[in-house]
Amino acid sequence: MSDQTWQIISMVIYLIGMIYIGYWAYRRTAGLGDYMLGGRGLGPAVTALSAGAADMSGWLLMGLPGAIYKTGLVEAWIAVGLTIGAWLNWKLVAPRLRAYTKVASDSITIPSFLENRLRDRSRLLRVASGIIILVFFTFYVSSGMVASGVFMEKSFGMEYHVGMLLIVAVTVGYTLFGGFLAVSYTDFVQGLMMFLALIAVPLLGLFAVGGPSGAMESIRQANPDALSMVKGATAVGVISSLAWGLGYFGQPHIIVRFMAIRTVEETKQGRRIGIGWMVLSCLGAIATALIGLAYFQQHPADKITNPETVYIAMGQILFHPIVAGFMLAAVLAAIMSTISSQLLVTSSALVEDLYKIIARREGSDSSYVLLGRLGVLAISVIAAALAWTTDSPILALVAFAWAGFGAAFGPTILMALFWRKLTAQGAIAGMVTGAILVGIWGTRDGGIFDLYEILPGFVGNLVVTTVVSLMTHRHDAEIHAEFDETVRQVRREERAAASEA
Image 1 (cartoon, rainbow, N blue to C red):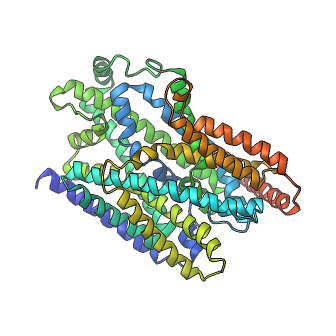
Image 2: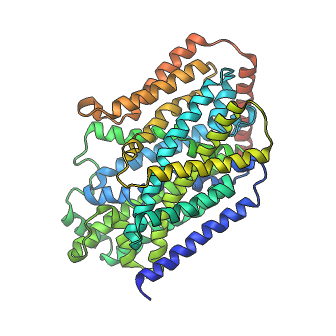
């Protein structure tokens, strides 16, 4: 059989596996709480890897290795910033968000938590949050669909639209029927695939380039500055890269995992697993780029033209075609895990945070689950329409999405969890300020505007939220009681964990 036939077999096995997990999850999904949050029953390992896989997308397997292959370790600052941000997110946000969302009327979405936490009877905060999620994630999902179509086109010669629709059908299928459980468990498998692939490629590649000494010599010949994190770096560039870590606090598709873990105590174990996975995966991606640089320096006839394909090229060179096929599937897994997570969060915003408010009447759990599935389908159709042409202008907007969510939601989430005096008026004003600053800053070039827009947006949100909240704060016994109960629960779980250790 040809190499491509082996690779197609691997891809088919992978896609069938994803469909099976969707079916398994479908049989375990009864009510809206199961569909949107898995019944708050995820274990720490599934929570950690599903959060990581939903976060990283194709950047980990293609974007990061490609940037380092092209420029050197100076591009690794963003990985440093993201790792620090992810650790702080697990440390600060995860335990309190798990406890507080349960205390605050068992909230199952971020907008509903903010409304319940701040007693916003106007419902404006919940509606505004839901609309922000709906709009930004539709663009995000569309971007992932474009990536899946391009991937199938470049890897298997499949026509762009056919490839895109195939991957969209599988991803939407298991998300639509299996809900949060399907998304989380497929993300877990996809996270394992990404991890194993990024460890295997550089380890085997090291032997192919003559061991550590051969690799170092060839890397220096290819690019004398490749192993330096400071050559070519600027203060603004390093600060901007590190600032990416601020985005974690406001990414709904990531922090929703914290709401679904079984107990507050298990967030500590989840943090260790998640950060361990992230550190090793990022190191694997960096090593893949450097080993690839050494290999193609030694074999100039095989040199690649697109740096972002270094992982794929090395996988095809080093492994049997069927294993290389699973290496390709790992790239697709990274793309699909992000699409599915964003689809579900967008659907939950549509049903839980917009439809329920507009309808102004309570329905049955089964009717809401049906609406959630219809929401996934509707958003998928809109996103696919936007992704129908690869040169869609929405891709320019997607560059703002991480900063937009981070600046709009990040400070608001942190202050909701740690500051008693946050008010609904302050939260709304801060969210709007953060989003507007990201939009303005991101469309300017030169000078101070070269700073990544999440930083001014995040700081602006913090300042405005603080000022407006202090101006509008009124003592509310129920809010303070819930805050105190959340703190007690977290401390009780921490003490229990410490005594067991």
